[in-house]
Length: 194
Image 1 (cartoon, one colour):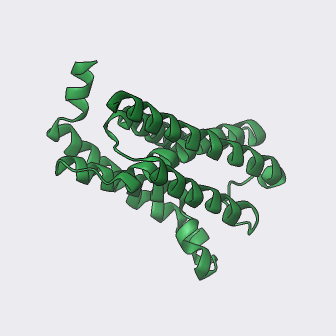
Image 2: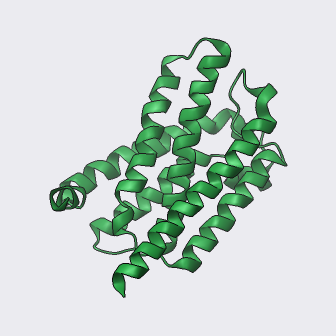
């Protein structure tokens, strides 16, 4: 495991991961442009879910490169990377099941969002957030669910409109799972420091 730790924190690898995440974040915001064009201004910060998650991780990587930690951003990154990484994989697979077809971009989204969730978990041992950081990130995450499924600003996947209530329910529990994962990381770090 020490080999993996050394590899994950190698500055060359961190720079590579930073570049990949910056490119992915830019593409993610580009992907959301059609939806953002019709989104009321008050909801705009909460609509581009996945690119905002990867943007949080961009700041985490910048901190690591500078030998620093940004605990609140780390908590936001972990929760949202797991949540939206898993969410997008499931939505694309559901699109394939419902419509019988998934364009190449869908397969690319499955791979990239799966990688988002994995990188969030792999770097969890380096995070330094405390309980209040997790609670603040949880508030952001659950508030985002309200914006998505009460004010109907959720990401639009053609063919899945009929299942929006079920998707909203799944998303709520996925949020709780992701928050639980961050709580676990926080409590484990606290136990290890005592």
